[in-house]
Image 1 (cartoon, rainbow over the protein chains, first blue to last red):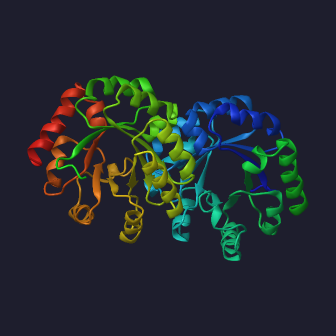
Image 2 (image 1 turned 45 degrees about the vertical axis):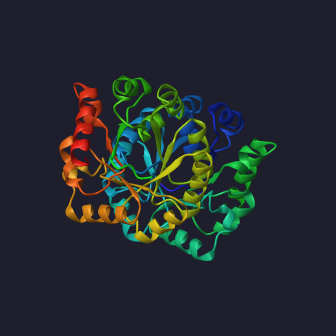
Image 3 (image 1 turned 90 degrees about the vertical axis):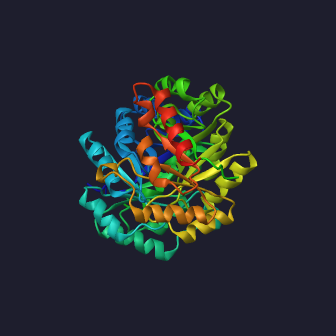
Amino acid sequence: MVATQPMLQVAMDTMDLDSALKTTRLVYDVVDIIEVGTILCLAEGLGAVKTIKTLYPDNLVLADVRVAEAGALISKMVFDAGANWISVLSSAALPTIETVAKEAFSKGGDVQIELQEGWTKEKANQWKALGITQVIFHKSRDSEKLGPGWDPELLGVIKSMSDEGFKVSITGNLNPGDLSVFKGIPVYSFVAGRAIRAASDPRVAAEEFKTEIQKIWQ
Amino acid sequence: MVATQPMLQVAMDTMDLDSALKTTRLVYDVVDIIEVGTILCLAEGLGAVKTIKTLYPDNLVLADVRVAEAGALISKMVFDAGANWISVLSSAALPTIETVAKEAFSKGGDVQIELQEGWTKEKANQWKALGITQVIFHKSRDSEKLGPGWDPELLGVIKSMSDEGFKVSITGNLNPGDLSVFKGIPVYSFVAGRAIRAASDPRVAAEEFKTEIQKIWQ
């Protein structure tokens, strides 16, 4: 079921678990989803996922491991650690994506495909045939310096994926003021990282996202 | 400098550090490169890289983190942990690959591009322009069930990348008997995982790879 109002996801891309907990303890009951970012997964291992899920059983927890290969083993580890969602790269081979989906669905979890350069609608239809409906449009951290904003062409693609039944999430250095550009699209979740983590008051920052979401998708 | 004889890399794709150490303690002075696999990096975090490098300072250590994004932070973490090499996905955006290369080279390290479906010679030339010369041809773990062997077309591509000055490494469920098919190609390294780890005597298994390499590339 696609939520009628976009969910809010806080991305914990910190270099250690304690730095993440400093933020999560303040915002867990404001946000819907806690993302254990690639950086945190690599820094601490999937024990970080286990600790976050143990602390916040009522949140959805995404292990942003960005599976490229070895889907069966990685997804088993991720769901054994208690994650609800796992991320997979759009460039992963279809058999890899299929093994991840099987493991995820067998554990009551879900799969989020991270759309990289070069993904195609044809691939998207293959994912859908596997039962995968979540995709995330990502403004690359490394590409962010190339310019702010979301160009109209990309917004059109996002809208069309949503129209085709995909649950689309949006990430990439978002601030509350960026959300209105997505008005009219039933976005599944917005991901905020530094805008919440680096705020002087992370809880207030998370609430500002929520308020903006409620205003735009009322 | 391309080694005249292929190097041997042992892949530690174990689900915990101790399982890896059971093998590495037996083979570290037979192999050239110890790979801390994606699975081990995720299981234990990059502390596994630090421990392996501390134990085996004379081996090259590859952190097989398969960077897709956030290149600057991940590569900083990886080289701070003591790795010599870092792996990056061919599907990563060029700015991501560039930030990884800068970090790697500034630390005296090297970058290995993992070739996924959809990589192109055009992209390879972009990597070379960044100073990256290592690529790895990967028979996917998830695709291995599709069939054994290396087809002649792929071997031709491997040969041509080598001719163009790339240091090519080869991985994917290799056994000593598989190596002869690469005769005539100055392979940079062969990666063996289960063939060594799961052998009744891992040291003997590693030595069999070495013997075969010396026989073929004498």
